[in-house]
Image 1 (cartoon, rainbow, N blue to C red):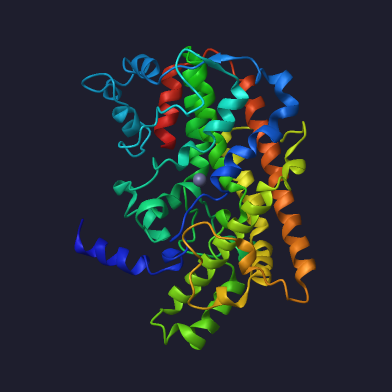
Image 2: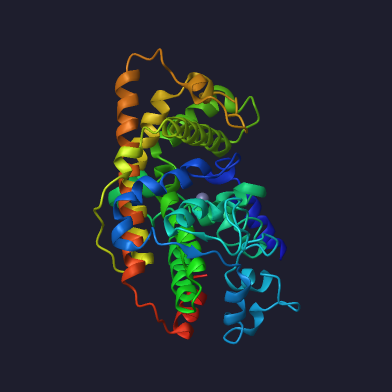
Length: 394
Ligand SMILES: [Zn+2]
């Protein structure tokens, strides 16, 4: 890479996203990604075949069937998914064909359980350390290493819209992130696998498609920064940021990061108590055209909740989160950071619960919509056509 690019990345990485993702990046926690599935789908099991057992299969037979179409997919020994990982542009070192501890080859499993167990798969590191994206989208997310390097795949900011200044403001002005593309890519892989007789892998890829849709329901994952936080962060810069050797942008990003992680931790704790199971349930679905188009609708819907979400999260946060103190790396008790002594606490908490209930409700509808869309598609598909589309969205 040239010096010019390196310099550019140095400057860009000091932008808003520098510290936003310095902690974990799970959108909803790993528990939530899995726990959301069963309540959302339980009422449509009968209509969709989600309860009919399917034989657990390794990834190898599917890759063998793909190889005549794309010879690069096979490995010299025919036993490694690295060629396939390259084909879908994910980290080649991650064993993407891994089964969960509840599965073994030869046994069978219900599709609803495949979707539940594997909705967490895309957080397995496959989207991390992808150097080819470093100077493209990653740089706007502060690039990062480890978990934060997957931000560009699991978050998406809509293009700037002057009529929605509050939530679409940010850099660059255009769409930033690839979550919607991934929804489409894994949906197409699911169709391809099923069409080649690999029913288990059809559901596995659909589970991955679920993951990015679930991510897009987290309002913090459908925006970059709110003007309110930008101005508060700037004030904090003059209060302590300067003295602590933070840049103005660094102070804003630090504040945003603390609120983001506090929100996720708090919602994680509440959902582990089952508080959001009810809104997930139902039989209703959305209008659906294509996975990409649908994911974009989901993103924008979530984006509209972002400024309010950030505002109320800030109202619920203890003053310590507005200091140089960094929200703990490891899971921590969110209640230690709740401003329970605030006079508006009950009202703010209720508002936050309302937003999360709405997000979970929308996520439930989205998961059902995707399952019905998958079942509506013909079982037999034109493999070449699907492969070409996958190449376009990767
Ligand atoms: Zn994710």
